[in-house]
Image 1 (cartoon, one colour):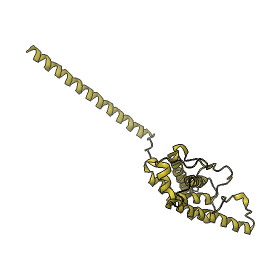
Image 2 (image 1 turned 90 degrees about the horizontal axis):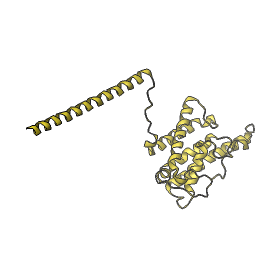
Image 3 (image 1 turned 90 degrees about the vertical axis):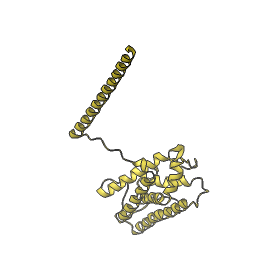
Image 4 (image 1 turned 30 degrees about the vertical axis):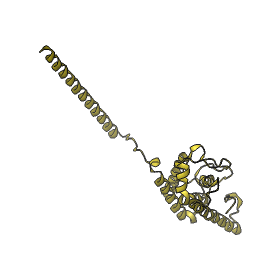
Length: 224
């Protein structure tokens, strides 16, 4: 298990040995976190008070801008490690930290799940994964350094992680239909509102007529 995440400025990419060591470090980072994620998902680290905080910190490292402060340049390997934790331990993280609002040990440096903040963090992760998928498809800004040899593997992991995050909390990601701001759409809204107002007037008139009939009938009975 690597003690530190791979940092870009530690390597000279013009040096073949450094380049080889960088490839080894990033591969080890993804593979070891995938193994750790499987252990968490299977409950092997159940006795660890910081297991969810650790999982959250690895995911945050890949998906949350600005975390952690010492990480000047995010790499595709950080995002892939995050995806591995969501794929292999996402069910358990969702159950404990999102639905049950579990707060991990306060001694861990990452405190995203604290104070019942799990649902907010989960939604942010899902949205960020969606942004990455869209950027990979369109060639837009990713927010991290992508090495082309990792593109296909990254795309597969991110799509599957995004789909799992959404599938576990579908209501959280349910999209509301956007308002129609075209002239035709606004005219349709105006017509619908006018029809509703007319219906309300008709109902009010009918109710008033019914009251009048009832009063008349009661008056006639009294006179009789």
